[in-house]
Amino acid sequence: MKNWHLSYPPAVQEAQILLSVARAQALKLMEHLSPFCSKIGIVGSVRREQEYVKDIELCCTPNREIVPTLFDTTTQRCSRFVHEAKNLGEVLKGNPADGRYMQIMLPSGIKLDLFIPQAHDYYRQYAIRTGSATYSAQIIALGWRKLGWCGTEHGLRREEYCTHDGNGWKWNNRETGQELPPAWESEREFFDWLKVPFRHPKHREVYR
Image (cartoon, rainbow, N blue to C red):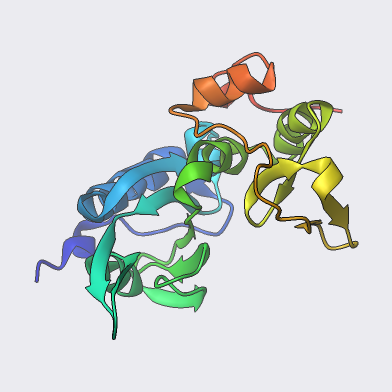
């Protein structure tokens, strides 16, 4: 198998990685994983074009494959994605088979945060994982709260069907017929639904 990471440039100190170095590695990672994903994109401070960054962040939706069961069939994440994600480097957190987040120490010494949202929630996660954290909280999340939605592990759900337990919103009432958010086809479409003006990622900073 091609040892694709050996051409990476060396990492510099945490929080002092040049954007050009981080972007080059992020693009290599995207190229490596994209055959096994329906969607994949760079997020975080690299996408916001910060001069220096502390890590690489990607958001992806792995392909799914049909597997036989005792009486029927089911689907699971693409086995090649699971294999390749495990072998990107030292897995510090998460499980590529069914988790929604992984943290991996790459051979170059740079950390990778890999976000793996549900397919219907990809563009919301793509937007909020782009950040900045303050922009995501004060602009994006405030936008959906104004529309009566809250963020749960299942995606956005109507607030009247959820409770907040101190650790986040929980979706409690799962009766059929509830209104669900749309399956956005782009980040811009998500912003339009929020009724929030679209900004280029490098302008998504909030200064107090």
